[in-house]
Every structure is written in structure tokens, then in C-alpha cells.
Amino acid sequence: MSKGATKNILVVGGGTAGAVLAARLSENSGLAVTLLEAGPGDEAYHASVLEPGRTYEVWAGTLPTATCNMASEWGDIPARQGRILGGTSALNASATLRGQPADYNAWKSAGLDGWGWDDVINTFIAAERDADFGSSPLHGNSGPLPVRRWRRDEFTVKHKAFMDGMAEVGVHAANDINDPAQLPGVGVFPATIDEQSRRVTTSLAYLTEEVRSRQNFTLRTQAEVHRVCIENGRATGVILTSGEELQADEVVLTAGALYSPTLLLRSGVGPGAHLADYGIAVQADLPVGATMSDHLGPAVYYSHEGAQGGNGGPAQVVLVGASNGTNVDYHGLPLHWTENEGRTEFQVVTFLLRSSGRGSVRLGESIDAEPNVVAPPMPDDTEVRLSHAFRALAAWEQSAAARAIDVRQLGEPRDLTAAGAVTAALEQGIFSYFHMTSTCPMGTVLDADCRVHGIDGLRVADASVMPTIPSGNTYLGCVMVAERVAQKMKAEYGSQN
Image 1 (spheres, helix red, strand yellow):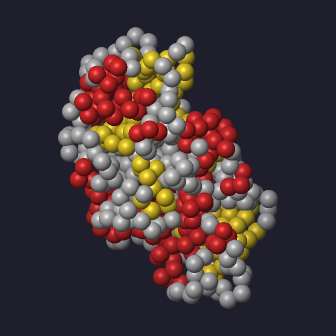
Image 2: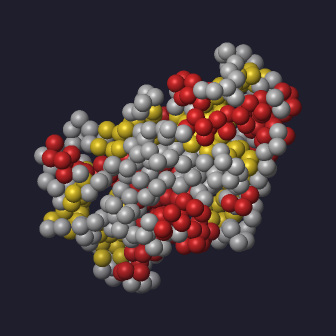
Image 3: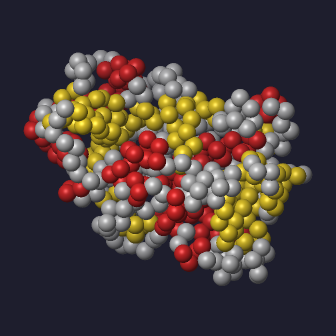
């Protein structure tokens, strides 16, 4: 513990949320903050990490990741979390969307005071440094995260055609897809990239040289935590997989929606019957891992003439759709590509954003094994809701912008307006947006300050805590959660600078 510090805080997981939380907590010199990351530091970033146009290389294995297969009715679905400083912010598509006001107002209506839209919007604004909109009612210009929208000269050929073609067939063109008043519509993803188009992870944005040099801040990489130590209803520290034990006044789990619940389960916090199967003493019988959500959906496969072009990331242009015409509930976006015999092959994936289905995270074959993950089921009305997206794609196929580059469906063309088109696409393959959430949610596992029910000195502060999944990309939501939990903790411990 550094001189002057009175409380020792362990932050477990140096990913998207953990880097934010540790940086903010260490602003208080009365707190000795240790950030534990299971993987290497950000000096180990492969060149492809910082070049968003090479994100597919990262997904193919140039970055340490924690990868598992989520079982589903449609087959196994790969799920990834970064296992390196910066975590998933080093391998995602940098899409910095917030979700919709109704998402957060539902949290507040469920009794979680301080989590409504009017509460969280100011946190979103304070976190960003928006190069396009600057300081404005919905945006900020002084936060740690640089944000800008992909420029048209950075678009790939397919993204230009998608943007132009959707507008041509009558889809509203939104200048700012973080403005709920402009949705539904087609628009450009804001991304956490700098002016040189380099990715900026949360570790690079928040764990600056100044932060890393603070006397009350310690960063330990290659320090994988096995479980939390709990004695007499209080967390007292953690045990690493190496066997080393670290003591703390408070432990905060920021290991992500797959591994924060896994750590709780190993520590005796979870469904009693499940823990009994592994001979784990129950410290708190809570529904940990029982309510996982994710954004899932099918793809339509295409090709166009010529090369891919562009130098931006995979998430550049998106159709933010509303199957009922009003409430945003799906995304449609062109993704993966390969060049083949003078043509570029790609997918347009349609992700359903609102779902009442729940998956699960459980311990695996042994307490030490990778977790057993079951994806949430697709809801019964998936065909009806995503048919709206498929009709939009069918119209886009016939647009002048799509015809100009000879967009064709791969294989035998399907009528995307036909009955059963969505189900047929799901049978061909289902994809995850890598937006796993809600495995340690506020309201059942945690209180509104993200403290674990029944265990003192233990919190969670990542996508796990979301009681329901936002209808948008979850990356920025993780930043918001970490920022707000840091505010709550600093208020509890008192300010000391």
C-alpha cells in the first residue's frame, strides 16, 4: 500500500471496464489500487490491433483472447473476450453506440435508482472527446476516449454501396446514430479512433503514463485470478492461479460477462445446487450466470465486383432498424470479406437487439476448466421482426448503388421477402455480436451500487451488471458502468487527492 493510502482495492481484469475503473479510482490518493490482468500488457499489441482495417486478423488470432463456444439451438456460436490489457476494446469493432433511452429507463423503473437515461447520458458525454460534434447537448469534447465517425474516403466499396443504396430506397440517413431522435435510419458508426485512424483502447485512453506513474497505482499483467477469498461474509482478497494470495479491503470484478460470473461461482457465490455439484461451499446463494443476454442474428452472403477497397474498420455503416417503425430493435451491417477471383465476398449480418431470452454461464468440466456457456434462445417473434431487416436488404439489392458494383447473393439466390427467409438464414448459421451481458445483474445478484448481495467488500463492474441488454453496441456501456461505479466508490471512501 502506498504512503498515505488507507484502503487497498483490487480490480480483477484490465479490460474495457477494468482499465477505466482502476484509472478513476487511483485519482483518489487515499486508495491503493492494484489492477490485475490475466494476459500481457498493451505493449504486446500486434500491429493489427492499432489498424482497424486489420481487425479480421485480430479475430483470426493475433491477440490473446478467451474464446469459448456458446451452445445454441442453431449450433455452437464462438464467443470472444480479449485477454490482454484493454481487453475486448482491443479486438472489437470500436463501435461506440450507447443504446436507447428506453433501455436505461427500464433499469430505473425496475428500482435501480441512478441508472435511468437522464443519469447515464452525462456519463457517456463526459467519457468522450468527439471530433465531429464537440461539446453539444449529446456529446463531449474533453473526455479520455477520442471518438469520430469513419470518413467516406475510408469506406470500403461495400460500405459506400450500402449507405448510398439504403438511402436511395427510402431509409432515413442519420447524421448521428447516437441521437435517438434521428433513428431508425442508416448511418456511420462512431469509433474510438484517433485522427490517424488508429484504434484507441481503454487502456491507452485511461491508463496514461501519468496514471501508471501514480504511487497508489499498481499494474500487474500475467496475473490470472482463480477465485475470490471470502471469510465470514466478506471478501478479503483473491488467489491467483499461481497460488499467490493478495489481500484487499475491497475486490471489484471486471473480468467480463463470461469470466466475472465464473470467478464468483468458483468463490462460492452462485446457485447453491450448481455449486454443490463441484463441492464448493456456498457463500451466497444467488442466480449468478443464469440470465445471460447477447445480440444474435443470421447473415445474408453476397459478393461484389472488384476489390474491397477502403482502409477503415469492419463496422463502418449500419442500418439501425425498427421492425415496428419506431422502437430500434435490430442492426444490419456489412462485415467479413475475402477476395476471390476478382470479386469481394462479404456478409450482411442482421442482429436482433431486443430479446427476452436468457442464456447461462456455468462452471465447466471442472472448477478450473473454461466455463460452460449457453447462448440465449432466439425469441419466438424473430422471423417477424427480422423480416423487416430482410425486406430492407431485398430493396437494397435492387438499388442503383448495389447494381453499380454488381452485388449478388452467393450461391442460389433467395427471395428475402419470402415467408421463412429469416429461419432459413438462421439454419445456415448464427452469429454473435460479442455483446454478452447480464450474467451478474443489478437487481438479483447485485444492488444498484454493483455490490454483491450478502458479501461485503465485493462488487462487479462490467457488462455482467446490466440487468437487461441495451439495444445497441455494449462497448461504450461498459465504459459507462465503470465510470459510474468509480464515482460511487470514491463517494463512499471520501475524496483525497
